[in-house]
Length: 301
Image (cartoon, rainbow, N blue to C red; front, side):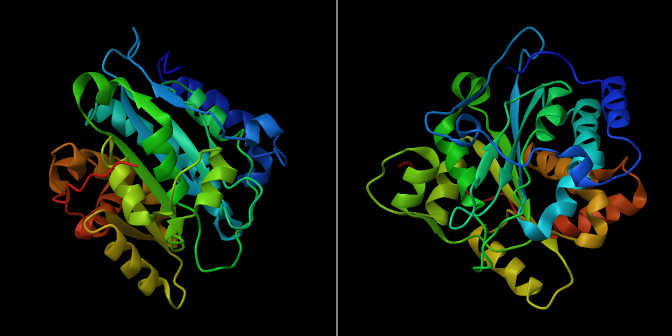
C-alpha cells in the first residue's frame, strides 16, 4: 500500500460520483460489515517507503461515527480530507504523506467499534473512507472509544518513518464526547483478539501511541451545556495536545489538521497559517491556543 500519487483531478472525478446532494447516506452506503471486515484480530497496517513515497510519513485521522456525529463524516468525505491532503502535499510540512482513516465508535455498545483503512497516498485515501460503515451507535454512557485508535496505532501499525528514520508520524482523533478512560482486558480481547494482563488506561494508551506518533485530539464544540467541561477533560487527559473547534466552524478542519501537523514538525502557528484564507486561519489559530508540544512521556505494554 501507499503507492501512487494524489491528484486534484482524481478528487474531482470521485467527488462528481457522489452527486450534488451532500448527504452521508448517499456516500457511506455500507450498512453491514462481513465478519472478516469487522474483525481486527491479527490486522496490521504498514506505511512503507516505495518509489512513489521514498520518505513516507504516516498520518492517521480517526473520527467519531456515533449517532451524534454523522455530519463529521459528511464533512470529511465532501471537503475536509481532500483539502487537508492538498495542504500537506502543496506546503510540505511532511514528506510523502500516507493517510489511514479510523472510524471510531463505542466498544461498550457498538457492533463495529473500530474500522481502519490502509495507509494510502492516492485517491484510495478517500475511496476507502467512503467504504466504512457509519454504524451511528454509541451508548449514551458518557464517552466514546477514541482509545481504540491509540491502541491500534501503538500495537498494529508499522512504519518506515519510525523504524528506519526514528521519526514520528501524526495521529489526530476528532469527536464531540469524552473518552471512556480505559480499555478493559475483555474489550481488547473482543475488538483486537489480543490478550493483555491488565486494563489499559487512556494515559497509558496515549503514551504508547506517542512513541511512534504525535498524538492530538480535536474536540467538537456543539454549543451544548457541558461542552466546555468535555474540552477541559480532554485538556487534562492530553496536556498541550487537545484543540477545540465549534461545530459551526468544521469547514476549517482542513486548516486545523494541516496546522497541527505543521506545528508538530517545528513550524510556528503563524508560519503554518500565513498563506491560509483569513477566516480559516483565525479559527485554526484560536484552536491552536492550547497546543504545547513539550510533553514527552513514553510507555510500552
